[in-house]
Length: 197
Image (cartoon, rainbow, N blue to C red):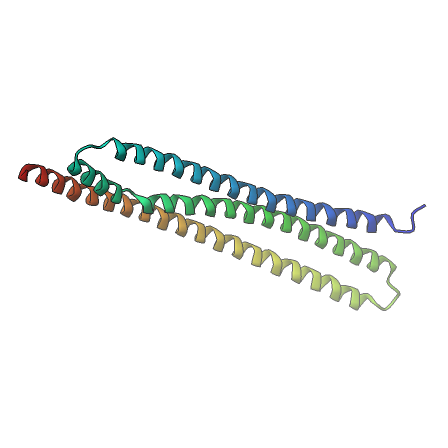
Protein backbone atom coordinates (compact mmCIF):
# COMPACT_ATOMS: atom_id res chain seq x y z
CA UNK A 1 0.00 0.00 0.00
CA UNK A 2 1.31 3.45 -0.96
CA UNK A 3 1.75 6.24 1.60
CA UNK A 4 0.52 8.80 -0.97
CA UNK A 5 -3.13 9.18 -1.94
CA UNK A 6 -3.92 8.20 -5.56
CA UNK A 7 -5.07 11.76 -6.38
CA UNK A 8 -1.66 13.12 -5.37
CA UNK A 9 0.18 10.59 -7.54
CA UNK A 10 -2.13 11.30 -10.49
CA UNK A 11 -1.59 15.04 -10.04
CA UNK A 12 2.19 14.61 -9.97
CA UNK A 13 2.09 12.42 -13.09
CA UNK A 14 -0.07 15.01 -14.91
CA UNK A 15 2.37 17.77 -13.92
CA UNK A 16 5.35 15.79 -15.21
CA UNK A 17 3.48 14.95 -18.44
CA UNK A 18 2.66 18.64 -18.95
CA UNK A 19 6.28 19.63 -18.34
CA UNK A 20 7.51 17.04 -20.85
CA UNK A 21 4.95 18.21 -23.42
CA UNK A 22 6.13 21.82 -23.01
CA UNK A 23 9.75 20.70 -23.26
CA UNK A 24 9.01 18.73 -26.44
CA UNK A 25 7.20 21.71 -27.96
CA UNK A 26 10.12 24.04 -27.22
CA UNK A 27 12.64 21.53 -28.61
CA UNK A 28 10.54 21.02 -31.74
CA UNK A 29 10.48 24.79 -32.33
CA UNK A 30 14.25 24.97 -31.83
CA UNK A 31 14.70 22.07 -34.25
CA UNK A 32 12.60 23.87 -36.88
CA UNK A 33 14.66 27.06 -36.46
CA UNK A 34 17.92 25.11 -36.88
CA UNK A 35 16.53 23.41 -40.00
CA UNK A 36 15.42 26.76 -41.44
CA UNK A 37 18.84 28.30 -40.79
CA UNK A 38 20.64 25.34 -42.37
CA UNK A 39 18.44 25.60 -45.47
CA UNK A 40 19.10 29.37 -45.69
CA UNK A 41 22.87 28.89 -45.36
CA UNK A 42 22.87 26.12 -47.99
CA UNK A 43 20.78 28.22 -50.41
CA UNK A 44 23.04 31.23 -49.85
CA UNK A 45 26.18 29.18 -50.48
CA UNK A 46 24.66 27.64 -53.62
CA UNK A 47 23.62 31.06 -54.91
CA UNK A 48 27.02 32.58 -54.11
CA UNK A 49 28.80 29.74 -55.90
CA UNK A 50 26.57 30.14 -58.93
CA UNK A 51 27.08 33.91 -59.08
CA UNK A 52 30.84 33.54 -58.69
CA UNK A 53 30.97 31.04 -61.56
CA UNK A 54 28.87 33.35 -63.72
CA UNK A 55 31.15 36.29 -62.90
CA UNK A 56 34.28 34.30 -63.73
CA UNK A 57 32.82 33.33 -67.10
CA UNK A 58 32.48 36.99 -68.16
CA UNK A 59 35.23 38.26 -70.44
CA UNK A 60 34.01 41.72 -71.41
CA UNK A 61 34.39 44.52 -68.77
CA UNK A 62 31.07 46.07 -69.79
CA UNK A 63 29.35 42.74 -69.24
CA UNK A 64 31.00 42.56 -65.80
CA UNK A 65 29.73 46.05 -64.92
CA UNK A 66 26.24 45.18 -66.09
CA UNK A 67 26.39 41.91 -64.13
CA UNK A 68 27.44 43.68 -60.92
CA UNK A 69 24.60 46.17 -61.44
CA UNK A 70 22.07 43.35 -61.71
CA UNK A 71 23.49 41.77 -58.55
CA UNK A 72 22.93 45.02 -56.67
CA UNK A 73 19.32 45.01 -57.77
CA UNK A 74 18.68 41.50 -56.44
CA UNK A 75 15.75 41.43 -54.02
CA UNK A 76 17.66 40.92 -50.78
CA UNK A 77 14.90 42.58 -48.78
CA UNK A 78 12.42 40.00 -50.07
CA UNK A 79 14.67 37.18 -48.90
CA UNK A 80 15.12 38.75 -45.47
CA UNK A 81 11.38 39.29 -45.20
CA UNK A 82 10.65 35.70 -46.24
CA UNK A 83 13.14 34.47 -43.62
CA UNK A 84 11.49 36.66 -40.97
CA UNK A 85 8.08 35.31 -41.96
CA UNK A 86 9.31 31.71 -41.58
CA UNK A 87 10.77 32.50 -38.15
CA UNK A 88 7.51 34.19 -37.15
CA UNK A 89 5.49 31.16 -38.33
CA UNK A 90 7.67 28.79 -36.29
CA UNK A 91 7.49 30.95 -33.17
CA UNK A 92 3.75 31.44 -33.62
CA UNK A 93 3.28 27.68 -33.86
CA UNK A 94 5.28 27.11 -30.69
CA UNK A 95 3.33 29.85 -28.91
CA UNK A 96 0.01 28.34 -30.02
CA UNK A 97 1.03 24.89 -28.80
CA UNK A 98 2.25 26.27 -25.46
CA UNK A 99 -1.04 28.15 -25.11
CA UNK A 100 -3.01 24.98 -25.83
CA UNK A 101 -0.99 23.00 -23.28
CA UNK A 102 -1.39 25.76 -20.71
CA UNK A 103 -5.15 25.90 -21.27
CA UNK A 104 -5.37 22.14 -20.82
CA UNK A 105 -3.38 22.37 -17.59
CA UNK A 106 -5.51 25.24 -16.29
CA UNK A 107 -8.72 23.40 -17.15
CA UNK A 108 -7.48 20.35 -15.23
CA UNK A 109 -6.55 22.59 -12.29
CA UNK A 110 -9.99 24.22 -12.33
CA UNK A 111 -11.64 20.80 -12.42
CA UNK A 112 -9.52 19.57 -9.50
CA UNK A 113 -10.33 22.70 -7.50
CA UNK A 114 -14.05 22.31 -8.20
CA UNK A 115 -13.88 18.65 -7.10
CA UNK A 116 -12.00 19.65 -3.94
CA UNK A 117 -14.64 22.27 -3.13
CA UNK A 118 -17.37 19.68 -3.75
CA UNK A 119 -15.69 17.24 -1.35
CA UNK A 120 -15.29 20.06 1.16
CA UNK A 121 -18.98 20.90 0.76
CA UNK A 122 -20.03 17.33 1.52
CA UNK A 123 -17.76 17.11 4.58
CA UNK A 124 -18.28 20.67 5.85
CA UNK A 125 -19.55 21.03 9.41
CA UNK A 126 -22.97 22.46 10.02
CA UNK A 127 -23.08 26.26 9.90
CA UNK A 128 -20.33 26.63 7.28
CA UNK A 129 -22.74 26.85 4.34
CA UNK A 130 -22.03 30.55 3.78
CA UNK A 131 -18.25 29.95 3.61
CA UNK A 132 -18.75 27.09 1.13
CA UNK A 133 -21.15 29.22 -0.94
CA UNK A 134 -18.55 32.01 -0.95
CA UNK A 135 -15.84 29.60 -2.20
CA UNK A 136 -18.13 28.31 -4.95
CA UNK A 137 -19.03 31.86 -5.96
CA UNK A 138 -15.36 32.87 -5.98
CA UNK A 139 -14.49 29.88 -8.15
CA UNK A 140 -17.28 30.70 -10.61
CA UNK A 141 -16.15 34.34 -10.78
CA UNK A 142 -12.52 33.34 -11.31
CA UNK A 143 -13.52 30.90 -14.07
CA UNK A 144 -15.63 33.55 -15.81
CA UNK A 145 -12.79 36.10 -15.59
CA UNK A 146 -10.32 33.58 -16.98
CA UNK A 147 -12.64 32.69 -19.86
CA UNK A 148 -13.13 36.38 -20.66
CA UNK A 149 -9.40 37.13 -20.58
CA UNK A 150 -8.69 34.05 -22.68
CA UNK A 151 -11.15 35.19 -25.37
CA UNK A 152 -9.67 38.70 -25.41
CA UNK A 153 -6.13 37.31 -25.66
CA UNK A 154 -7.12 35.05 -28.57
CA UNK A 155 -8.80 37.95 -30.38
CA UNK A 156 -5.73 40.14 -29.86
CA UNK A 157 -3.46 37.37 -31.17
CA UNK A 158 -5.68 36.94 -34.25
CA UNK A 159 -5.68 40.69 -34.95
CA UNK A 160 -1.91 40.88 -34.47
CA UNK A 161 -1.31 37.95 -36.81
CA UNK A 162 -3.58 39.39 -39.51
CA UNK A 163 -1.84 42.78 -39.19
CA UNK A 164 1.60 41.17 -39.49
CA UNK A 165 0.46 39.18 -42.52
CA UNK A 166 -0.97 42.32 -44.16
CA UNK A 167 2.22 44.27 -43.43
CA UNK A 168 4.39 41.45 -44.79
CA UNK A 169 2.31 41.24 -47.96
CA UNK A 170 2.49 45.00 -48.44
CA UNK A 171 6.26 44.90 -47.94
CA UNK A 172 6.62 42.03 -50.44
CA UNK A 173 4.59 44.01 -52.97
CA UNK A 174 6.64 47.16 -52.38
CA UNK A 175 9.92 45.23 -52.61
CA UNK A 176 8.81 43.59 -55.85
CA UNK A 177 7.78 46.95 -57.30
CA UNK A 178 11.05 48.50 -56.16
CA UNK A 179 13.07 45.64 -57.63
CA UNK A 180 11.36 46.06 -60.99
CA UNK A 181 12.14 49.80 -60.88
CA UNK A 182 15.77 49.14 -59.92
CA UNK A 183 16.38 46.68 -62.74
CA UNK A 184 14.88 48.93 -65.41
CA UNK A 185 17.42 51.81 -65.00
CA UNK A 186 20.29 49.30 -64.76
CA UNK A 187 19.26 47.73 -68.02
CA UNK A 188 18.86 51.14 -69.64
CA UNK A 189 22.27 52.36 -68.48
CA UNK A 190 23.84 49.13 -69.74
CA UNK A 191 22.25 49.57 -73.16
CA UNK A 192 23.30 53.28 -73.24
CA UNK A 193 26.92 52.37 -72.50
CA UNK A 194 26.87 49.76 -75.24
CA UNK A 195 25.49 52.33 -77.73
CA UNK A 196 28.17 54.90 -76.86
CA UNK A 197 31.03 52.48 -77.57
